[in-house]
Image (cartoon, rainbow, N blue to C red):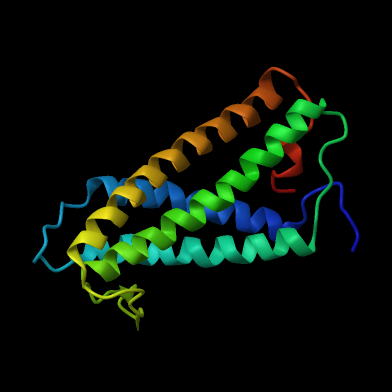
Length: 176
């Protein structure tokens, strides 16, 4: 297995597609109406879940790609930056996967029959269970906030490399 110095096109495509979908996903999640116990999910929830499933699949594919096509850490960085970068990247994987799976579990524990963009019925990951639904909803919300904070840290670090350090670290993930 060859370790590359730059991210390849597939890694960049996965990264920027997931970024775009998360930029859509967060506003949908925050703006959709609150659904109470016996309410059926509407279009907003269907799209929220559908985008979540898309993000889940793309993240899983990106993780497989990363494991099979490793990219060397930027050698010009101090050890603490390489280590923190690696930690944040793995935390992003864990939080994206955990947030999307917990959202799907929440829908399942609510007993909602949901579809993928009205095209494909999604399997239930659990059965209707009010207590489990409340617990997983709390976990889902905590993970979405932790993910948002981690994303903001990731963006701040990228901007620091552009404007403060003025190195070429960010160029490794930019198109072209």
